[in-house]
Length: 513
Image (cartoon, rainbow, N blue to C red; front, side, top):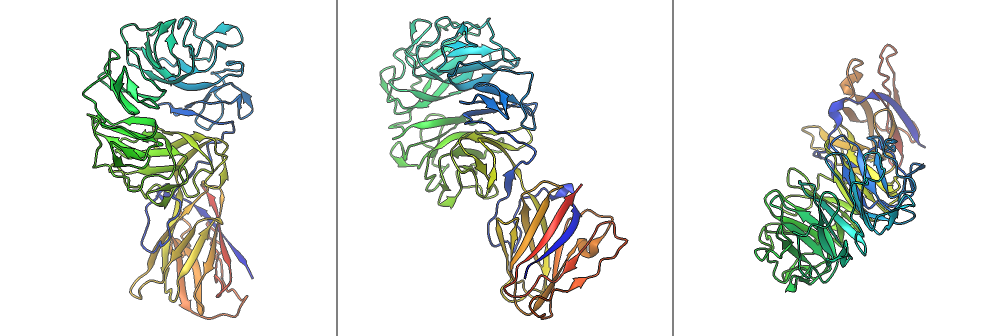
């Protein structure tokens, strides 16, 4: 027979923790979807986190949250569409593949479009004003003759573009070029014969040099397998030599402050050394042996996001990282090992195309998924450290307890040594104000375990501790015993027996601020 126990609690701000405590034998999610960020749209290709907390996205969508906006949208901090930036009818059914925001708020877009707003010719590259209208002062002339897949904005306002094109403004430019701040071709950047395959990503160095990764095997006639560096004038930089390069396509590059380069993609070797789909290169292009991801990922990482502490977030097609389950979003330490302090639980149920870290440390992901952490989040979500409740269990003997939070992650709490209590912590996948269930799945026979909060239910304090006290007190099946509630307590406290062997019991926490 099941029993539901209700405990009305207020969570203190200090409960935003994600470290594991002794007694937590099973790993559990410690990052969760942010319930304060709700978005519904079609696939998202790229996400840019802005200093204001707003979010710029692009993809093959025609609306966001029911608001018409084609290919590009600006979102407020809660995920609603920013009405000050409107782009309905922008693309005439074509796509934006890449975008970049200038310091003045204008937005550069690249894709497969040939006109904007049904009348203005713009071949695959354009700039939008801060309100989403076409910026007529940025005119690339005849533009690119094929898709623009990547953009990189220089500090001087010039724009690097990479893609499938062979001409820009009527001038031969094989798959990579640079535009002036007004959109015209920059003739001072000349890559010669360019690349013989598509560059899928560009990364701009502070010194003006350009890292490129993609499906090419030559740059201006010189062998460079899928990764290379160009000088600021477009010529091949011979000082960056990756040897035999990668044996598969790098989809994304991330430049570290020390000049080292993270690469993620479909490769399994870098310069003949096994590196499954993620690796780091030294500033001269050689493989950095100090970054070792073990067995790597079992599917391609499509996007890398470097954190200030040197850790790197990866999103893509994988379901494992170094043999550990991680569904399409994970974080690596600075040495390449899996960061187990970042656990998104069920993760994303389909491909993650883009990852971005916000100024407050929250993590945005976009892609083709419909669920994140087992919850509905169509194509974009924001992850945050999970709320947790911790506590201790005293007097527990036998096999220990197994707690299940909100019907998902299980937490095994083994019986402690007689000398002291067993600490535990479990994640709360709801924000303050929501309901939270804890189900006791297993408990030793012959014991009665009573639940209290803040030791004795102190009415003046926020709940920061759940205590389970177990004593030898066998009860008959179906015979829970209630501890009387002191009526004057402002913070309602209800404690009862958590059942006997084979029984399921629930503690319901109604969080309030």
